[in-house]
Amino acid sequence: MTRYAFIMRIKPELRAEYEKAHDEIWPDMAAAIRKSGIRNYSIYFRQDGTLFAYLESKDPGAAFAWLGKTEVNARWQKAMDRFFVKKDPSTLGPDVEVIEEVFHID
Image (cartoon, rainbow, N blue to C red; front, side):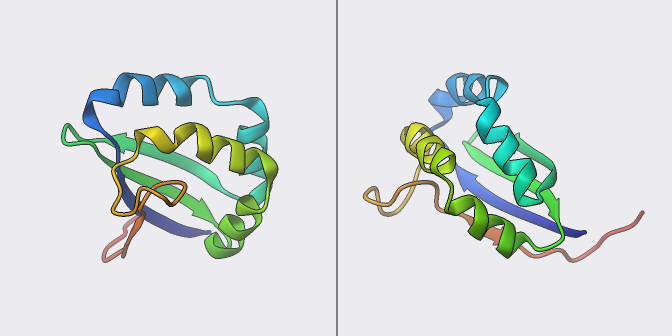
């Protein structure tokens, strides 16, 4: 499995609502994430609104490409869009910055 990490930003004042949405993730969205091959997916919050996300996948690029073609992901991104801080408000979904792994130990 490839370890994959990225950051994105939400409006800090919407943290509780963002967490609630993920506590109540749609079953079909959770199933699509699993079907894409994504495993061990976690999101962490900093007080400034930065989210750190970590996941594992055999091929993260292929997993995201597959997920991006699903109807449920399109609905989820539309529902989540209001939470994100981003440079271009006309794009759907968050601005994502991939973080390069520089150290790992089991």
